[in-house]
Image 1 (tube, one colour):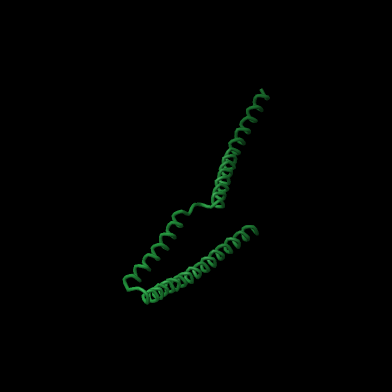
Image 2: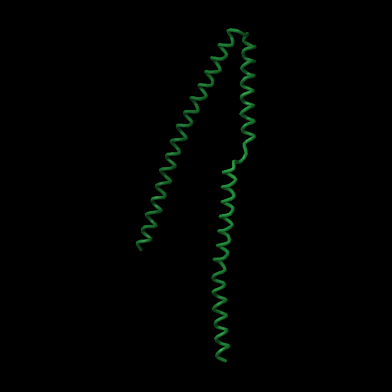
Length: 135
């Protein structure tokens, strides 16, 4: 009975832990979204400041084209880096460990399924061998 109560307490504690973790992650997401808005604002103001600085030396169209070219180069560079990303060594090793664990669990499960069958066969064999001895 005590073990059942302890299991209930453990389950309630786990639910509470997940609720607290979800609330914390929600706050982190909200703060991250606000920070992202300010990063975008900084980038926009940086573009405006660069345009104003360049417009002192070049005409408006030339200034805009220069900034467009710089932004295009930055976007292509980061796009290529994002497209080139492949799984790291740690990710591949973790996948391999997971696969080995699942295979081992399947093996243990199939062995556990054979135990009752083996037990039944053993009982049947014993009862048949006893009946042969009695004859």
